[in-house]
Each structure stands twice: as C-alpha cells, then as structure tokens.
Length: 88
Image (cartoon, rainbow, N blue to C red; front, side, top):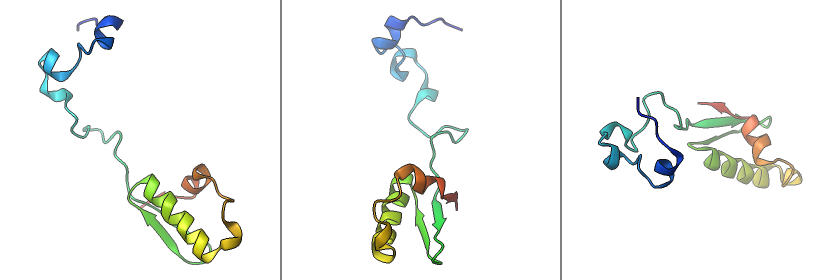
C-alpha cells in the first residue's frame, strides 16, 4: 500500500486518471453508501407524503402542511420532518 502525502492530495494526485485505477470512478459504490432511498411520512390526518430524495420529501411535506394544516406552517424544521420519515 502506498503512503500518500497531504501535498499529493491537495494537488489532485489521487484522481483516477493519475493513479491508473478505473475503480475510482463516480459510479455508485457497491456498499450503497451515498444512495438515497425513497421516503415517506404518514400524516396523522391520513395522508401519505413521499419523496425520492430528502429534499423532495421536505418540499412535499411543507406543501402538504400549507394546504391541509395552515396553522402549522413554519413549525417543523427540515430535521424534524426527516425524523418523521421512513424508507419506502
């Protein structure tokens, strides 16, 4: 195993084309790390809100709150919304 210096990291010496390794591509990691799963929130009013990404879920949840629960607008943070979610 080669020991890389901090200077080599900062100069881009570890870019795939520089180390001659094709397995360092931007393709999805085999362990699934970084992949987002669709998530959903089951609202107490009976509605189900879904999103393919965290951003989509938060946006859809905020839209649902605005439409169905206007008295709650602005009461849930992004973190609180995501804490209510589960994978689909």
